[in-house]
Length: 297
Ligand code: AMP
Ligand code: FE
Ligand code: FE
Ligand code: ZN
Image (cartoon, rainbow, N blue to C red; front, side, top):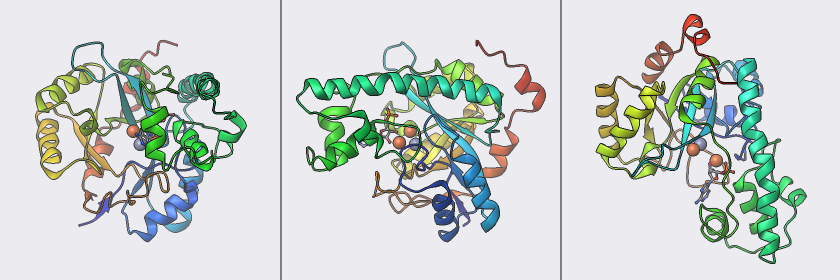
């Protein structure tokens, strides 16, 4: 079976491969298509597309952004949204992503201050050295802690300091779901709820969440994912068919930060069928539909 990987990260966010290296790795792995979906930035997309052209590797331009959850019992506090097949040069997209990057720029010094208050003399410059691009996130803080030998591995850095509710955690601003979905659709993207299995909602809870997101414009759901077992994937495929959601899948490959996740293969058993590409492309907003979405800024 021909396989694809529509969820990966490069050095433009918190992955360890440059966009070119990522595309080369996809080509070596024999993937029919690879999407580059960095957190909050499309900075790596142009380089990935160029590398794809040089190799004859199909590259899908994408992004992964954070959404606020819905304020209701049992709903997750935050969610990740993938935008696939987007136009990285669309002007409203740049403005929206800048908002997310400003939120990071405000949060990062606050995280540093929390570490300093804990008696750990971390500096922002030190953390920045671990970032391959402009974007700095908690994984780079984890690397800095590891370099100082304050933790044994990155997982411990999150468990002790960086995860929600821990000593150095600082929340950051996220898009309300309808706004985030509209932002990506305006840029021509097919919007997909990332890794729904991580919510541990149960199927009824997930269906309720998807119904809210569909009201807010969601197109699809990531049924195939490294951390989804086959039964959960089948259940999500069933939900997607019933709710008329398009299906996507990917590994969430990061390279070194997630060394147990392989491009295309996840933990070894992931197989995202290339046949999903047609359905996803069909769901792309047409120019008229994209124009009709009014953005609140
Ligand atoms: P940020 O975007 O700065 O809030 O960082 C979020 C990123 O940190 C996620 O997308 C993951 O790549 C990583 N991450 C979150 N939780 C953990 C964890 N428990 N262990 C390792 N990495 C994590
Ligand atoms: Fe990440
Ligand atoms: Fe994610
Ligand atoms: Zn991701």
